[in-house]
Structure formats: structure tokens, C-alpha cells
Image 1 (cartoon, rainbow, N blue to C red):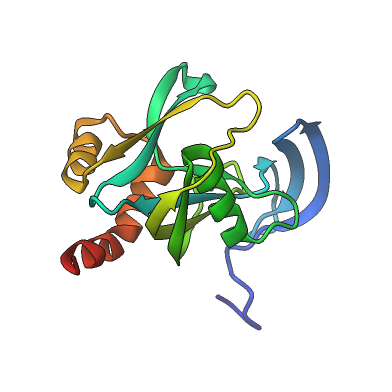
Image 2: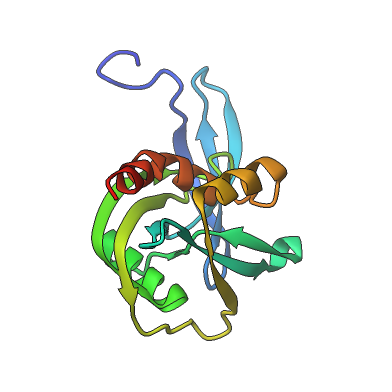
Length: 189
């Protein structure tokens, strides 16, 4: 930081223009002034944000999903997650996504933290929650959403991460952020 709390690395926006507006993503191109006074262009994606839920079942397993991801043309093992709707409270979003995608509701919720998965080209943030005290609820997938729900024990999650069967950044980050809470619940049984 330099004088008056301004970050010496800050890039000042000179102009900002939308390049593409899709249903989910919006691409922007900004002209910026760099810290040394020179100018450059920054292109980035604006994203509404998302939540991810680390949900612990009574059995001690975690709720996972297997879902096809079109950009990489394959199915991935992931924790339940979804986009935050405009004006939606992040906890309300987490509750909604867990119920809609997995058919579970949770009695206990804890905010774990936030991650920024693509800082070089996106403003996306993913809010991380830990949920336990699960009960069955009505599942209601979004139109065009297809996924399988499965349970993985902690040792299976660790093994899948090490073996490269779980490579999704939000899943790995959320799992490790929530791991102390998972362990606390498992030890308290």
C-alpha cells in the first residue's frame, strides 16, 4: 500500500465496454492505466457469483455429485454448487442449491469462507458453506440439469483428489476449508 491507503499495484480504469453478454457470463474489455502510468487493455468475465456446499451425512460421508461439464466434455465429481441469483442471500442460495440438486435439507449451516477461482480473467467468487444434520427434502433440478448424487467418505475424497479423479477447484478448495469442521463433527460422534 502507498499513500492514503491506495495499493501501489492498483490499475485505474479509463474506459470500460461490454464485448459479449450471454445468459450467464458477460465479457468486458477495459482500458487501464498501470502503476507506472503506461496503458493497457484488460479483458475479463463478469460472473454473478456462486456457492458451494460441503454437506456431511449422518453416516460420516459427504454428499457429492457427478455432472457432465460441457467445456471439458466429461463428467466431474463435485460438491453441490450453483449460481447466486440477483439479490439472493448467499445462505438462501446454498440452502436452495443443496435441496434442488441433492434432495437434502440441513439443520446446521456454517459459513466457511470465499474463494476466487479464476482471478486472471473473471470476477467470480464462490462462497463456501458447511452443512450437517441432513434430512431428505424434495429434489428439484433446474431445467436441462442432469446429475447423479453419491456419497464419499473422507478417505475416499482424499484418495480421489490425490489420484486426479476430483480436479474441480471449487470442490478441492471447499473440502479443505471445511475439513476442520468435518473432523470436528466426526470426532464428536
